Image 1: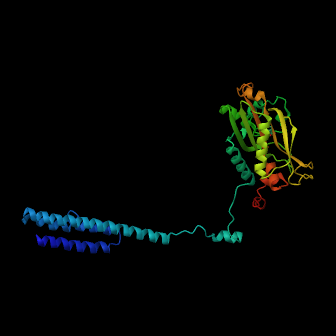
Image 2: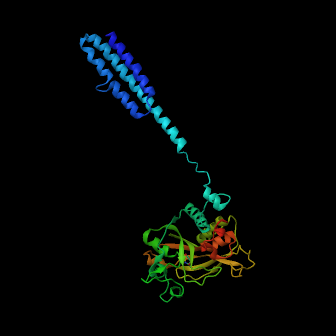
Length: 350
Ligand code: DAH
């Protein structure tokens, strides 16, 4: 019996040496196979148990189990050691320094790569979205290719309203049109949501315009609308003031004039003192010192009716912010055409 136990001890020493020298997972599997596999060394020893008493067999059995456990322990320790070594060498050979300027950028730019950023209109749009969502408004969207109903009809434009004219609106061959304002989304929101509601709808709009320093055929607006049981001009003015103060970071000079839009009654034009020329007159304010940025009003009963709401029960206020002009005031940009010119020298300033 003592012989067999000594043999097992010897196996353990051999196995430990083989494991220590194993170079990879395959070599480890081979060690396991050689020592404790079906035809392995331990099986060879156990075949000699026949001549022993039951007590002696028990002793050898214990030694065999201890050997197996020891082997498992050594194998898994070596396995994790090999794994760590593998990752350490991967980290060495496949290391990637993402902060290094690629040589080709450095060559083109001279001083290294320039990172891009969002367009100045997008920056202001996002800021406005933050301001309005913090006041409980939802951001909604609508299609840019619209139909007459959503762009005009449901907004209380008469059939002969001049805005419908081919001179002002881009029509498609299929009888659709490119929306001329984001007010379309007022109707879309009223169709899809239940009052009370507060929404803003930023987006791109299109007009068949003679392009100059203050007119583009493609520009950006942000519509806003609240519908509730009681909405007043006071609510509307408060919203407008919050908006402008937040965007400009200070009080700005504003004036309110009556304005006509078919979908509001009463309607107003909110102008702000031109910040490009400080009111002395320039191309942006058409030399008047004031810029129309915020037409607004109380939602016309006909608009409420066309959405199936009873004007005796529901009231609304709306505004249509001209995003391009607002951004021009913010940054002192003198020509609206810069926005879409795709000139990097212009865009990099923001
Ligand atoms: N949709 C109008 C335009 O583009 C602007 C406008 C005026 C929007 C008054 C409104 C509003 O929501 O109440 O000319």
